[in-house]
Image 1 (tube, rainbow, N blue to C red):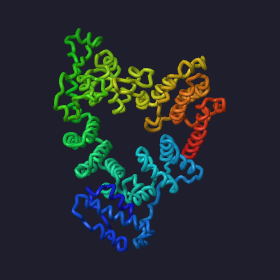
Image 2 (cartoon, rainbow, N blue to C red):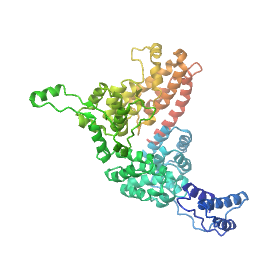
Image 3 (cartoon, helix red, strand yellow):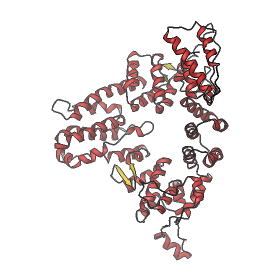
Image 4 (cartoon, rainbow, N blue to C red):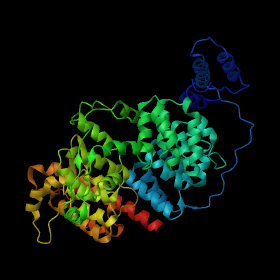
Length: 552
Protein backbone atom coordinates (compact mmCIF):
# COMPACT_ATOMS: atom_id res chain seq x y z
CA UNK A 1 0.00 0.00 0.00
CA UNK A 2 1.35 3.47 -0.83
CA UNK A 3 0.19 7.05 -1.28
CA UNK A 4 -0.16 6.94 -5.11
CA UNK A 5 -2.36 3.84 -4.73
CA UNK A 6 -4.61 5.67 -2.26
CA UNK A 7 -4.60 8.84 -4.36
CA UNK A 8 -5.85 6.94 -7.39
CA UNK A 9 -8.78 5.59 -5.37
CA UNK A 10 -9.59 9.07 -4.09
CA UNK A 11 -9.68 10.41 -7.65
CA UNK A 12 -12.06 7.64 -8.70
CA UNK A 13 -14.37 8.47 -5.79
CA UNK A 14 -15.32 6.30 -2.84
CA UNK A 15 -19.01 6.70 -3.68
CA UNK A 16 -18.45 4.60 -6.82
CA UNK A 17 -16.10 2.02 -5.41
CA UNK A 18 -15.28 1.34 -1.71
CA UNK A 19 -11.58 1.85 -0.99
CA UNK A 20 -9.31 -1.18 -1.14
CA UNK A 21 -6.75 -1.42 1.67
CA UNK A 22 -4.63 -4.50 0.93
CA UNK A 23 -3.27 -6.44 3.90
CA UNK A 24 0.19 -5.26 4.96
CA UNK A 25 1.94 -6.99 7.86
CA UNK A 26 4.19 -4.01 8.62
CA UNK A 27 3.54 -1.76 11.63
CA UNK A 28 2.11 1.06 9.47
CA UNK A 29 0.04 -1.53 7.60
CA UNK A 30 -1.51 -2.94 10.76
CA UNK A 31 -2.17 0.56 12.09
CA UNK A 32 -3.79 1.54 8.80
CA UNK A 33 -6.07 -1.50 8.90
CA UNK A 34 -7.07 -0.83 12.51
CA UNK A 35 -7.85 2.85 11.99
CA UNK A 36 -9.61 2.29 8.68
CA UNK A 37 -11.74 -0.45 10.25
CA UNK A 38 -13.29 2.09 12.60
CA UNK A 39 -16.70 3.01 11.20
CA UNK A 40 -18.89 5.81 12.45
CA UNK A 41 -21.99 5.03 10.41
CA UNK A 42 -21.98 8.40 8.62
CA UNK A 43 -22.64 8.78 4.91
CA UNK A 44 -18.96 9.66 4.48
CA UNK A 45 -17.70 6.50 6.17
CA UNK A 46 -15.89 5.16 3.10
CA UNK A 47 -14.20 8.49 2.40
CA UNK A 48 -13.09 8.69 6.04
CA UNK A 49 -11.56 5.21 5.82
CA UNK A 50 -9.50 6.28 2.84
CA UNK A 51 -8.44 9.58 4.41
CA UNK A 52 -7.39 7.85 7.63
CA UNK A 53 -5.29 5.38 5.67
CA UNK A 54 -3.68 8.27 3.79
CA UNK A 55 -3.01 10.04 7.09
CA UNK A 56 -1.13 7.02 8.43
CA UNK A 57 0.96 6.78 5.27
CA UNK A 58 1.73 10.52 5.32
CA UNK A 59 2.84 10.61 8.97
CA UNK A 60 4.97 7.49 8.59
CA UNK A 61 6.56 8.97 5.48
CA UNK A 62 7.45 12.17 7.33
CA UNK A 63 9.00 10.06 10.07
CA UNK A 64 11.31 8.45 7.51
CA UNK A 65 9.60 5.09 7.25
CA UNK A 66 10.68 2.96 4.29
CA UNK A 67 8.51 0.00 3.26
CA UNK A 68 10.23 -3.39 3.37
CA UNK A 69 11.67 -4.81 0.17
CA UNK A 70 9.06 -6.87 -1.63
CA UNK A 71 9.65 -10.56 -2.24
CA UNK A 72 7.35 -10.65 -5.26
CA UNK A 73 8.71 -11.69 -8.62
CA UNK A 74 10.07 -9.09 -10.98
CA UNK A 75 7.70 -7.97 -13.75
CA UNK A 76 7.94 -9.58 -17.12
CA UNK A 77 10.56 -7.91 -19.30
CA UNK A 78 9.56 -5.61 -22.12
CA UNK A 79 8.65 -7.52 -25.31
CA UNK A 80 11.04 -7.18 -28.26
CA UNK A 81 10.58 -4.05 -30.36
CA UNK A 82 9.86 -4.92 -34.02
CA UNK A 83 10.67 -1.41 -35.21
CA UNK A 84 14.03 0.34 -35.10
CA UNK A 85 14.60 3.00 -32.47
CA UNK A 86 16.07 6.40 -33.28
CA UNK A 87 19.75 5.92 -32.46
CA UNK A 88 21.61 8.96 -33.80
CA UNK A 89 22.69 11.16 -30.89
CA UNK A 90 22.22 14.44 -32.77
CA UNK A 91 18.67 13.52 -33.79
CA UNK A 92 17.84 12.38 -30.27
CA UNK A 93 18.93 15.83 -29.06
CA UNK A 94 16.69 17.46 -31.67
CA UNK A 95 13.73 15.31 -30.63
CA UNK A 96 14.36 16.11 -26.98
CA UNK A 97 14.17 19.81 -27.81
CA UNK A 98 11.02 19.31 -29.88
CA UNK A 99 9.32 17.47 -27.01
CA UNK A 100 10.33 20.04 -24.40
CA UNK A 101 9.81 23.35 -26.19
CA UNK A 102 8.57 22.79 -29.74
CA UNK A 103 5.17 23.86 -30.98
CA UNK A 104 2.49 21.22 -31.42
CA UNK A 105 2.82 21.63 -35.20
CA UNK A 106 6.56 20.88 -34.95
CA UNK A 107 5.87 17.88 -32.74
CA UNK A 108 3.25 16.50 -35.10
CA UNK A 109 5.60 16.83 -38.06
CA UNK A 110 8.36 15.01 -36.15
CA UNK A 111 5.96 12.21 -35.14
CA UNK A 112 4.65 11.89 -38.71
CA UNK A 113 8.17 11.64 -40.16
CA UNK A 114 9.18 9.10 -37.53
CA UNK A 115 6.12 6.96 -38.18
CA UNK A 116 6.66 7.11 -41.94
CA UNK A 117 10.26 5.95 -41.49
CA UNK A 118 9.17 3.01 -39.32
CA UNK A 119 11.02 4.35 -36.27
CA UNK A 120 10.08 4.59 -32.61
CA UNK A 121 11.24 6.92 -29.88
CA UNK A 122 14.47 5.97 -28.11
CA UNK A 123 14.00 4.71 -24.52
CA UNK A 124 15.65 7.82 -23.07
CA UNK A 125 12.88 10.06 -24.46
CA UNK A 126 9.90 7.90 -23.51
CA UNK A 127 9.27 9.39 -20.03
CA UNK A 128 9.29 12.89 -21.51
CA UNK A 129 7.02 11.90 -24.41
CA UNK A 130 4.55 9.94 -22.27
CA UNK A 131 4.29 12.79 -19.79
CA UNK A 132 3.66 15.18 -22.69
CA UNK A 133 0.86 12.89 -23.88
CA UNK A 134 -0.65 12.90 -20.40
CA UNK A 135 -0.75 16.72 -20.43
CA UNK A 136 -1.76 17.27 -24.08
CA UNK A 137 -4.85 15.36 -25.26
CA UNK A 138 -4.34 16.22 -28.95
CA UNK A 139 -0.90 14.55 -28.93
CA UNK A 140 -1.85 11.31 -27.16
CA UNK A 141 -2.74 9.39 -30.31
CA UNK A 142 0.38 10.39 -32.29
CA UNK A 143 2.66 9.68 -29.32
CA UNK A 144 1.10 6.26 -28.79
CA UNK A 145 1.95 5.39 -32.41
CA UNK A 146 5.68 6.08 -32.02
CA UNK A 147 6.19 5.01 -28.38
CA UNK A 148 6.73 1.40 -29.42
CA UNK A 149 6.60 -1.71 -27.25
CA UNK A 150 8.64 -0.14 -24.47
CA UNK A 151 6.23 2.78 -24.30
CA UNK A 152 3.34 0.35 -23.89
CA UNK A 153 5.34 -1.63 -21.35
CA UNK A 154 6.00 1.50 -19.30
CA UNK A 155 2.36 2.54 -19.59
CA UNK A 156 1.31 -0.81 -18.16
CA UNK A 157 3.37 -0.10 -15.04
CA UNK A 158 2.76 3.60 -14.55
CA UNK A 159 -0.89 4.60 -14.70
CA UNK A 160 0.02 8.23 -15.45
CA UNK A 161 1.78 7.12 -18.64
CA UNK A 162 -0.82 4.65 -19.85
CA UNK A 163 -1.96 6.42 -23.00
CA UNK A 164 -2.76 3.05 -24.56
CA UNK A 165 -5.26 1.52 -22.11
CA UNK A 166 -3.34 -1.76 -22.40
CA UNK A 167 -1.89 -4.21 -19.91
CA UNK A 168 1.59 -5.71 -19.77
CA UNK A 169 0.60 -8.23 -22.46
CA UNK A 170 -0.18 -5.34 -24.84
CA UNK A 171 -3.89 -6.15 -24.75
CA UNK A 172 -6.70 -3.75 -23.95
CA UNK A 173 -6.97 -3.92 -20.18
CA UNK A 174 -10.51 -4.06 -18.70
CA UNK A 175 -8.98 -2.97 -15.40
CA UNK A 176 -8.28 0.41 -17.02
CA UNK A 177 -11.97 0.75 -17.85
CA UNK A 178 -12.97 -0.17 -14.31
CA UNK A 179 -10.39 1.79 -12.31
CA UNK A 180 -8.44 4.11 -14.61
CA UNK A 181 -8.55 7.88 -14.82
CA UNK A 182 -11.01 9.55 -17.17
CA UNK A 183 -8.21 10.05 -19.72
CA UNK A 184 -7.31 6.36 -19.61
CA UNK A 185 -10.92 5.21 -19.85
CA UNK A 186 -11.48 7.46 -22.86
CA UNK A 187 -8.38 5.94 -24.48
CA UNK A 188 -9.67 2.47 -23.67
CA UNK A 189 -13.12 3.12 -25.13
CA UNK A 190 -11.72 4.71 -28.31
CA UNK A 191 -9.31 1.81 -28.80
CA UNK A 192 -12.08 -0.72 -28.24
CA UNK A 193 -14.31 1.18 -30.68
CA UNK A 194 -11.57 0.84 -33.30
CA UNK A 195 -11.46 -2.94 -32.70
CA UNK A 196 -15.07 -3.80 -31.92
CA UNK A 197 -17.55 -0.87 -32.04
CA UNK A 198 -20.48 -2.92 -30.76
CA UNK A 199 -18.59 -4.27 -27.76
CA UNK A 200 -17.39 -0.78 -26.83
CA UNK A 201 -20.91 0.63 -27.05
CA UNK A 202 -22.30 -2.21 -24.93
CA UNK A 203 -19.60 -1.70 -22.31
CA UNK A 204 -20.47 1.97 -22.03
CA UNK A 205 -24.19 1.27 -22.00
CA UNK A 206 -23.90 -1.37 -19.28
CA UNK A 207 -21.94 0.88 -16.92
CA UNK A 208 -23.46 4.26 -17.80
CA UNK A 209 -25.64 4.42 -14.68
CA UNK A 210 -22.51 4.52 -12.49
CA UNK A 211 -20.95 7.50 -14.31
CA UNK A 212 -21.43 11.16 -13.53
CA UNK A 213 -22.56 13.60 -16.22
CA UNK A 214 -19.03 14.66 -17.13
CA UNK A 215 -17.97 11.07 -17.68
CA UNK A 216 -21.09 10.18 -19.67
CA UNK A 217 -20.56 13.18 -21.95
CA UNK A 218 -16.91 12.26 -22.53
CA UNK A 219 -17.72 8.62 -23.28
CA UNK A 220 -20.57 9.61 -25.58
CA UNK A 221 -18.07 11.64 -27.57
CA UNK A 222 -15.89 8.52 -27.89
CA UNK A 223 -18.67 6.86 -29.90
CA UNK A 224 -17.71 9.17 -32.75
CA UNK A 225 -14.91 6.67 -33.41
CA UNK A 226 -16.39 4.13 -35.83
CA UNK A 227 -19.81 5.79 -35.72
CA UNK A 228 -22.47 3.84 -37.63
CA UNK A 229 -26.21 3.26 -37.83
CA UNK A 230 -25.81 0.52 -35.21
CA UNK A 231 -25.20 3.25 -32.61
CA UNK A 232 -28.43 5.10 -33.34
CA UNK A 233 -30.67 3.30 -30.84
CA UNK A 234 -28.35 3.93 -27.90
CA UNK A 235 -27.79 7.56 -28.92
CA UNK A 236 -31.55 8.07 -29.19
CA UNK A 237 -31.91 6.65 -25.68
CA UNK A 238 -29.35 9.13 -24.35
CA UNK A 239 -31.07 11.96 -26.20
CA UNK A 240 -34.45 11.02 -24.75
CA UNK A 241 -33.63 9.93 -21.22
CA UNK A 242 -30.29 11.24 -19.97
CA UNK A 243 -30.61 13.84 -17.22
CA UNK A 244 -27.62 15.88 -18.37
CA UNK A 245 -28.08 18.43 -21.14
CA UNK A 246 -24.38 18.08 -21.97
CA UNK A 247 -24.85 14.36 -22.60
CA UNK A 248 -27.96 14.93 -24.69
CA UNK A 249 -26.10 17.51 -26.76
CA UNK A 250 -23.24 15.07 -27.31
CA UNK A 251 -25.70 12.42 -28.47
CA UNK A 252 -27.46 14.85 -30.81
CA UNK A 253 -24.14 15.95 -32.33
CA UNK A 254 -23.47 12.32 -33.30
CA UNK A 255 -26.97 11.63 -34.56
CA UNK A 256 -26.60 14.58 -36.94
CA UNK A 257 -23.67 12.72 -38.51
CA UNK A 258 -25.90 9.75 -39.36
CA UNK A 259 -27.80 10.86 -42.50
CA UNK A 260 -30.33 8.02 -42.22
CA UNK A 261 -31.02 8.47 -38.51
CA UNK A 262 -34.45 9.22 -37.15
CA UNK A 263 -33.10 12.45 -35.69
CA UNK A 264 -32.02 13.72 -39.12
CA UNK A 265 -35.29 12.51 -40.65
CA UNK A 266 -37.32 14.44 -38.06
CA UNK A 267 -35.29 17.58 -38.67
CA UNK A 268 -35.64 17.15 -42.42
CA UNK A 269 -39.42 16.86 -42.15
CA UNK A 270 -39.56 20.05 -40.07
CA UNK A 271 -37.31 21.88 -42.51
CA UNK A 272 -39.26 20.69 -45.55
CA UNK A 273 -42.27 22.56 -44.19
CA UNK A 274 -40.16 25.73 -44.06
CA UNK A 275 -38.37 25.50 -47.43
CA UNK A 276 -41.21 25.34 -49.92
CA UNK A 277 -40.21 24.29 -53.43
CA UNK A 278 -42.67 25.30 -56.19
CA UNK A 279 -44.09 22.51 -58.29
CA UNK A 280 -42.51 22.06 -61.70
CA UNK A 281 -44.46 23.54 -64.60
CA UNK A 282 -46.37 21.04 -66.68
CA UNK A 283 -46.15 20.44 -70.39
CA UNK A 284 -43.28 20.74 -72.80
CA UNK A 285 -43.28 24.54 -72.83
CA UNK A 286 -43.36 24.63 -69.04
CA UNK A 287 -40.43 22.27 -68.75
CA UNK A 288 -38.41 24.29 -71.27
CA UNK A 289 -39.20 27.51 -69.41
CA UNK A 290 -38.23 25.93 -66.08
CA UNK A 291 -34.88 24.92 -67.51
CA UNK A 292 -34.07 28.59 -68.13
CA UNK A 293 -35.76 30.20 -65.12
CA UNK A 294 -36.76 27.65 -62.54
CA UNK A 295 -38.88 29.12 -59.72
CA UNK A 296 -36.88 29.48 -56.53
CA UNK A 297 -37.87 28.02 -53.15
CA UNK A 298 -39.72 30.13 -50.62
CA UNK A 299 -38.65 30.39 -46.98
CA UNK A 300 -41.51 30.09 -44.50
CA UNK A 301 -40.12 29.77 -40.94
CA UNK A 302 -42.33 28.22 -38.25
CA UNK A 303 -45.15 30.42 -37.00
CA UNK A 304 -45.06 28.86 -33.53
CA UNK A 305 -42.91 26.56 -31.44
CA UNK A 306 -44.00 22.93 -31.20
CA UNK A 307 -43.39 21.58 -27.65
CA UNK A 308 -42.45 18.23 -29.20
CA UNK A 309 -39.31 19.86 -30.60
CA UNK A 310 -37.81 20.04 -27.12
CA UNK A 311 -37.24 16.29 -27.25
CA UNK A 312 -34.67 16.95 -29.99
CA UNK A 313 -33.02 19.77 -27.99
CA UNK A 314 -34.61 22.63 -29.91
CA UNK A 315 -35.10 25.61 -27.63
CA UNK A 316 -38.05 27.96 -27.70
CA UNK A 317 -36.26 30.99 -26.28
CA UNK A 318 -33.08 32.26 -27.84
CA UNK A 319 -30.04 33.27 -25.74
CA UNK A 320 -29.81 36.98 -24.98
CA UNK A 321 -26.76 37.41 -27.21
CA UNK A 322 -28.57 36.10 -30.31
CA UNK A 323 -29.97 38.72 -32.68
CA UNK A 324 -32.42 36.37 -34.42
CA UNK A 325 -36.12 36.84 -33.85
CA UNK A 326 -38.15 33.86 -32.57
CA UNK A 327 -39.03 32.45 -36.02
CA UNK A 328 -35.49 32.88 -37.33
CA UNK A 329 -34.13 31.24 -34.17
CA UNK A 330 -36.33 28.17 -34.64
CA UNK A 331 -35.44 27.91 -38.34
CA UNK A 332 -31.72 28.22 -37.59
CA UNK A 333 -31.81 25.43 -35.00
CA UNK A 334 -33.54 23.11 -37.46
CA UNK A 335 -31.45 24.08 -40.48
CA UNK A 336 -28.06 23.52 -38.85
CA UNK A 337 -29.02 19.93 -37.94
CA UNK A 338 -29.78 18.86 -41.51
CA UNK A 339 -27.04 17.47 -43.79
CA UNK A 340 -25.97 19.67 -46.69
CA UNK A 341 -26.98 16.92 -49.11
CA UNK A 342 -30.59 17.41 -47.97
CA UNK A 343 -30.62 21.00 -49.22
CA UNK A 344 -29.35 19.99 -52.66
CA UNK A 345 -31.78 17.08 -52.96
CA UNK A 346 -34.78 19.03 -51.67
CA UNK A 347 -34.29 22.11 -53.86
CA UNK A 348 -32.44 20.64 -56.85
CA UNK A 349 -29.90 23.48 -56.56
CA UNK A 350 -26.11 23.35 -56.38
CA UNK A 351 -24.22 24.83 -53.40
CA UNK A 352 -23.38 27.94 -55.46
CA UNK A 353 -27.00 28.38 -56.55
CA UNK A 354 -28.27 27.90 -52.99
CA UNK A 355 -25.88 30.54 -51.65
CA UNK A 356 -26.92 32.96 -54.41
CA UNK A 357 -30.58 32.28 -53.60
CA UNK A 358 -30.03 32.81 -49.87
CA UNK A 359 -28.48 36.24 -50.47
CA UNK A 360 -31.76 37.37 -52.05
CA UNK A 361 -34.04 36.24 -49.22
CA UNK A 362 -35.03 37.92 -45.96
CA UNK A 363 -33.49 34.96 -44.11
CA UNK A 364 -29.94 35.26 -45.45
CA UNK A 365 -28.15 35.08 -42.10
CA UNK A 366 -30.17 32.09 -40.91
CA UNK A 367 -29.43 30.07 -44.04
CA UNK A 368 -25.76 31.00 -44.41
CA UNK A 369 -24.99 30.39 -40.76
CA UNK A 370 -26.65 26.97 -40.91
CA UNK A 371 -24.59 26.03 -43.97
CA UNK A 372 -21.32 27.36 -42.56
CA UNK A 373 -21.74 25.26 -39.43
CA UNK A 374 -22.77 22.17 -41.40
CA UNK A 375 -19.86 22.48 -43.87
CA UNK A 376 -17.40 22.71 -41.01
CA UNK A 377 -18.99 19.73 -39.25
CA UNK A 378 -19.14 17.56 -42.38
CA UNK A 379 -15.74 18.73 -43.68
CA UNK A 380 -17.45 19.19 -47.04
CA UNK A 381 -14.94 20.36 -49.68
CA UNK A 382 -17.47 21.39 -52.36
CA UNK A 383 -19.49 23.49 -49.94
CA UNK A 384 -16.32 24.97 -48.43
CA UNK A 385 -15.24 26.06 -51.92
CA UNK A 386 -18.63 27.63 -52.65
CA UNK A 387 -18.76 29.45 -49.30
CA UNK A 388 -15.24 30.82 -49.74
CA UNK A 389 -16.05 32.09 -53.23
CA UNK A 390 -19.50 33.56 -52.56
CA UNK A 391 -19.56 34.44 -48.84
CA UNK A 392 -15.98 35.12 -47.76
CA UNK A 393 -14.79 36.25 -51.22
CA UNK A 394 -11.38 37.78 -50.38
CA UNK A 395 -12.16 38.36 -46.71
CA UNK A 396 -10.39 36.60 -43.83
CA UNK A 397 -13.39 36.56 -41.52
CA UNK A 398 -17.13 37.04 -41.90
CA UNK A 399 -19.85 37.70 -39.35
CA UNK A 400 -23.21 36.11 -40.03
CA UNK A 401 -25.54 37.32 -37.37
CA UNK A 402 -23.72 36.68 -34.12
CA UNK A 403 -21.70 33.85 -35.69
CA UNK A 404 -18.10 34.62 -36.65
CA UNK A 405 -16.33 32.36 -39.11
CA UNK A 406 -12.70 32.22 -40.21
CA UNK A 407 -11.87 31.56 -43.86
CA UNK A 408 -8.86 29.51 -42.79
CA UNK A 409 -11.01 26.75 -41.29
CA UNK A 410 -12.74 26.33 -44.65
CA UNK A 411 -9.55 26.66 -46.70
CA UNK A 412 -8.24 23.67 -44.76
CA UNK A 413 -11.11 21.56 -46.14
CA UNK A 414 -10.10 22.08 -49.77
CA UNK A 415 -7.95 19.75 -51.89
CA UNK A 416 -4.25 20.82 -51.78
CA UNK A 417 -4.10 22.81 -55.08
CA UNK A 418 -7.25 24.78 -54.25
CA UNK A 419 -6.09 25.21 -50.66
CA UNK A 420 -2.84 26.82 -51.78
CA UNK A 421 -4.57 29.20 -54.17
CA UNK A 422 -7.21 30.23 -51.62
CA UNK A 423 -4.60 30.96 -48.96
CA UNK A 424 -2.20 32.83 -51.24
CA UNK A 425 -4.88 35.11 -52.65
CA UNK A 426 -5.60 36.33 -49.11
CA UNK A 427 -1.92 37.08 -48.39
CA UNK A 428 -1.28 40.31 -50.34
CA UNK A 429 1.85 40.69 -52.44
CA UNK A 430 2.61 42.95 -55.43
CA UNK A 431 2.98 41.42 -58.86
CA UNK A 432 6.04 41.50 -61.06
CA UNK A 433 5.51 45.22 -61.69
CA UNK A 434 6.46 45.85 -58.08
CA UNK A 435 4.99 48.59 -55.90
CA UNK A 436 7.21 48.27 -52.83
CA UNK A 437 6.49 50.68 -50.01
CA UNK A 438 3.34 52.05 -51.64
CA UNK A 439 1.81 48.58 -51.86
CA UNK A 440 2.78 47.90 -48.23
CA UNK A 441 1.08 51.10 -47.09
CA UNK A 442 -2.08 50.23 -48.99
CA UNK A 443 -2.38 46.59 -47.88
CA UNK A 444 -1.03 46.40 -44.33
CA UNK A 445 -4.55 46.01 -42.89
CA UNK A 446 -5.05 42.85 -44.92
CA UNK A 447 -1.78 41.51 -43.53
CA UNK A 448 -2.93 42.24 -40.00
CA UNK A 449 -6.08 40.23 -40.69
CA UNK A 450 -4.06 37.44 -42.27
CA UNK A 451 -2.13 37.26 -38.98
CA UNK A 452 -5.08 35.30 -37.56
CA UNK A 453 -4.09 32.32 -39.69
CA UNK A 454 -3.20 29.14 -37.82
CA UNK A 455 -2.15 26.20 -39.98
CA UNK A 456 -2.43 23.96 -36.91
CA UNK A 457 -6.18 23.80 -37.65
CA UNK A 458 -5.42 21.80 -40.79
CA UNK A 459 -5.22 18.04 -40.53
CA UNK A 460 -2.32 15.91 -41.74
CA UNK A 461 0.60 17.00 -43.90
CA UNK A 462 -0.34 20.38 -45.38
CA UNK A 463 3.01 21.14 -47.05
CA UNK A 464 2.66 23.23 -50.20
CA UNK A 465 3.89 22.23 -53.64
CA UNK A 466 7.16 23.76 -54.83
CA UNK A 467 5.27 26.34 -56.89
CA UNK A 468 3.00 27.25 -54.00
CA UNK A 469 5.97 27.26 -51.63
CA UNK A 470 7.85 29.74 -53.85
CA UNK A 471 4.81 32.04 -53.84
CA UNK A 472 4.53 31.82 -50.06
CA UNK A 473 8.25 32.54 -49.57
CA UNK A 474 7.99 35.56 -51.88
CA UNK A 475 5.11 36.99 -49.82
CA UNK A 476 6.85 36.51 -46.49
CA UNK A 477 10.06 38.06 -47.82
CA UNK A 478 8.21 41.04 -49.30
CA UNK A 479 6.70 41.94 -45.95
CA UNK A 480 9.96 41.29 -44.11
CA UNK A 481 11.70 43.72 -46.48
CA UNK A 482 8.99 46.39 -46.17
CA UNK A 483 7.65 46.05 -42.61
CA UNK A 484 9.90 48.83 -41.29
CA UNK A 485 8.57 51.41 -43.74
CA UNK A 486 4.90 51.50 -42.80
CA UNK A 487 5.17 54.39 -40.38
CA UNK A 488 3.21 54.44 -37.16
CA UNK A 489 1.48 51.11 -37.74
CA UNK A 490 4.71 49.11 -38.08
CA UNK A 491 4.48 47.73 -34.53
CA UNK A 492 1.04 46.15 -35.01
CA UNK A 493 2.04 44.88 -38.42
CA UNK A 494 5.16 43.29 -36.95
CA UNK A 495 3.05 41.37 -34.44
CA UNK A 496 0.81 40.10 -37.25
CA UNK A 497 3.81 39.17 -39.38
CA UNK A 498 5.31 37.27 -36.45
CA UNK A 499 2.14 35.21 -36.22
CA UNK A 500 2.11 34.68 -39.97
CA UNK A 501 5.65 33.34 -40.18
CA UNK A 502 5.13 30.91 -37.30
CA UNK A 503 1.90 29.62 -38.87
CA UNK A 504 3.00 29.42 -42.52
CA UNK A 505 6.55 28.17 -41.94
CA UNK A 506 5.29 24.57 -41.76
CA UNK A 507 3.69 24.86 -45.19
CA UNK A 508 6.97 25.65 -46.96
CA UNK A 509 8.77 22.66 -48.53
CA UNK A 510 12.05 21.90 -46.76
CA UNK A 511 14.02 22.47 -49.97
CA UNK A 512 12.94 26.14 -49.97
CA UNK A 513 13.75 26.98 -46.35
CA UNK A 514 17.21 28.34 -47.11
CA UNK A 515 15.68 30.67 -49.73
CA UNK A 516 13.42 32.08 -47.03
CA UNK A 517 16.29 32.90 -44.68
CA UNK A 518 18.90 34.07 -47.19
CA UNK A 519 19.42 37.83 -46.88
CA UNK A 520 16.81 38.15 -44.13
CA UNK A 521 16.91 41.74 -42.73
CA UNK A 522 17.73 41.01 -39.09
CA UNK A 523 20.21 43.73 -38.15
CA UNK A 524 19.60 46.45 -35.58
CA UNK A 525 18.01 48.64 -38.23
CA UNK A 526 15.42 46.00 -39.11
CA UNK A 527 11.87 45.92 -37.77
CA UNK A 528 11.22 43.99 -34.51
CA UNK A 529 9.47 41.30 -36.52
CA UNK A 530 12.59 40.75 -38.62
CA UNK A 531 14.87 40.29 -35.63
CA UNK A 532 12.55 37.93 -33.74
CA UNK A 533 11.61 36.20 -37.00
CA UNK A 534 15.25 35.53 -37.76
CA UNK A 535 15.76 33.89 -34.36
CA UNK A 536 12.68 31.71 -34.86
CA UNK A 537 13.63 30.76 -38.41
CA UNK A 538 17.22 29.79 -37.68
CA UNK A 539 16.12 27.38 -34.95
CA UNK A 540 13.05 26.03 -36.75
CA UNK A 541 14.86 25.54 -40.07
CA UNK A 542 17.69 23.69 -38.40
CA UNK A 543 15.19 21.43 -36.64
CA UNK A 544 13.07 20.68 -39.71
CA UNK A 545 16.09 20.00 -41.92
CA UNK A 546 17.60 17.63 -39.35
CA UNK A 547 14.34 15.70 -39.02
CA UNK A 548 13.78 15.43 -42.76
CA UNK A 549 17.38 14.42 -43.49
CA UNK A 550 17.35 11.67 -40.87
CA UNK A 551 13.88 10.25 -41.53
CA UNK A 552 13.84 10.65 -45.33
